[in-house]
Image (cartoon, rainbow, N blue to C red; front, side, top):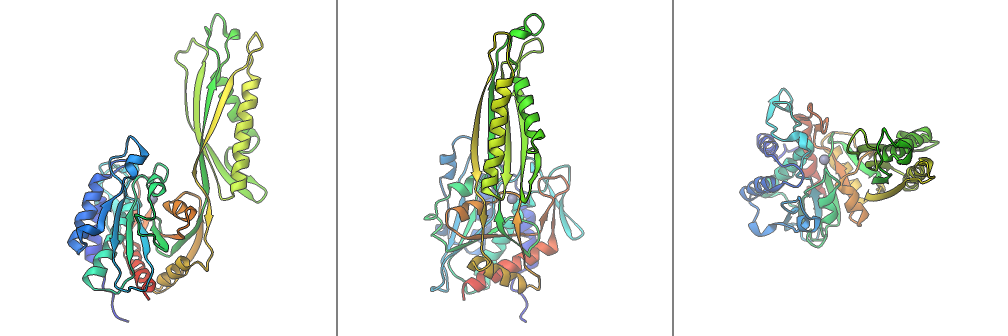
Amino acid sequence: MKSSPIDNDRALQHLMDLLSIEGPTGQESKVVKGITEKLVAAGCKKSWIKTDDAHKRLGDGYEIGNLIVKLPGTVKSASRIMFSAHMDTVPLCKGAVPMIKGNRVVAKGDTGLGGDDRSGCAAMVTLCETILNEKVPHPPITFLFPIAEENGLHGSRMVRFTDLGNPAMGFNLDGQFPNELVIGAMSAVRWEAEITGLSTHAGLEPHKGISAGLIGSKAMAMVAEKGYFGKITKGSRTGTSNLGSVNGGEASNQVMDRCIMTGECRSHNAAFLKQIIKVYKESFAAAAKGVINDKGRCGKVKFTVINDYNAFRLKKSEPCVKIASKAVEAVGLKPNPLVMDAGLDANNFNEKGLPTVTLGTGSHQFHQVDEYVNIKEYLAACEVLLNIAKLAGT
Ligand SMILES: [Zn+2]
């Protein structure tokens, strides 16, 4: 077998460089600049590179759009494929300084590393550079670097397929082991309960007040008693739910008249997710009715749900799954198809009709201070991507 055209030293350098750039959600400009410079140096024409207007459509708090790079194909008959890896990192990664420690890249100080998902970005840069420098025959390829993945998959939700050149299939890079093929992921919703009570003096006339805090506490206790808090198992159906924030009250001597609680619910089963939400809604409604003042008045709850993303399940016969499996086998690894307990940009692509499988690029312990990238796995992932491009071009 001919040895790989990938230059491992350069691949590692791309990883180290991109890990050094700060780019929390909404502030991806420097990442766009860093990736663009690398791609231009690799031989991309400036006319192939653009950013879209996703940030404008998302509103305040987003400084730049999704980075989209469209490579023309050398195999003209092949349909366009897409690779994607999100640019933003979680706040824990602010100020990260990457360093090599044995077979790993770790953060020097007390921060996250940002291998989620700069390892995916670096693997894509490596692929693009290898294809252009080594003149590897390839189909038309779109490289998409979405913004704002970490706070709810917003960049990928906003991207227009026409801007992507309408690819036929997608390969999203956002995971751990290079042989992992995510062929399904779950649905998730965020919820908010806006609780209204009645404020009175807590020492003189507490019986005249209606405590929003008590309503919220009772509601959450009911949810938990019914078995719908945290990890949820009802027969063969599973899911999760969480109370993420509680904000209410002004003073300790005042009955709390307003409280806002927020949280989330997830499940692989869309019908069961609806059931979890129903339990939350009913519990808040019952709790509101159950907290009564001396005049027989009760509180109110406005319960709203925001749909974050919908579950998907790819068939193993789907071309992107078949190509990814073959590409993994070609580096001597065994493909491991799995279903994820979290949302991915691929949820949005699949939902809108672009079949997309997600692969890992050696990144581990996401969103933690001990986050690291396994160098061997990262380099294997670079080989897998090159194989995907080759296979899709035949
Ligand atoms: Zn990620």
